[in-house]
Length: 358
Image (cartoon, rainbow, N blue to C red; front, top):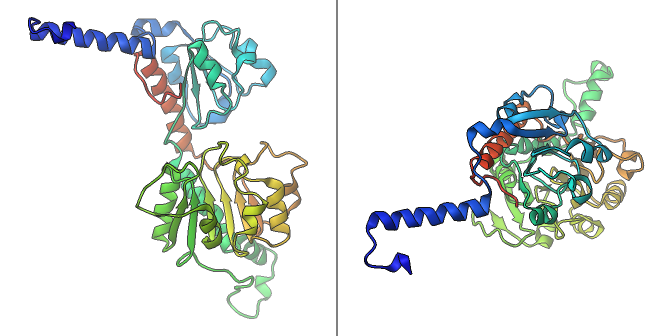
């Protein structure tokens, strides 16, 4: 082989190695677009509303002609992306039926960590790069996890109503602590999914004085920083269970009737992961029969919530508190997300790999 030849000068050997590296990179990552060619890109933002109108995303125009749509229905996708080189999307389904006529499509950028809306195998077969945004929402999702937990643990809506109804004005003493509530210190906090967000929650729970245990649904997390337990142990011992796992075949409906039956009757469930990791009918039955104490949800199987969702029947906010998939949505987090997408596009055009899914 050339590289093993003893007659090659060092500078020639270095040239050959660099050349081989660049050719391999070209094959793996695609073209390295010249900066002067960036303005030729046609970029379509399908769901600008998902980033909020308070976040400036005009910096995408550095890369070319940008068309913005506040929202996009499934039947509108194919027409809107027909000439696109780059699609920026969140929940819009991007699959063969919606993007097959987008002959110039080179890159799909998700304004989210999850990419269930994209047909990854189809994109891989067609040579379409897919990237996601990671790490942007860790602080706020962890914060919202505790907002839900503390709201339910301290039964805050009851005391708020007690004051605003005028009952407190008539009270015989200065305080009220019924219904009775408890504190976090000394509780066992169980985590399913010890990724970036799960680890942040574990850190905060530890500061509150909780014993932290976790279950790895993938079986691949062997950290020794926190106590790893099997699923049955986590269900039986946890006072609070928070879900931070991705949606996979292993985690879909992981919280089902059998799981709720094995939890403490005083336990609180928090789901800030994906809606389908919880069997909503089973959760409804567990809450209405007193099998578990309460649940705080930021995600649902169908969003916005369907009128026939059984959980919509529960009006007691001390038992069930639902927020509209906004745990990730602080101004700071959405700004970071938009910037992550910007950096993903910039890296792609420079022939570099960044947050590549496929």
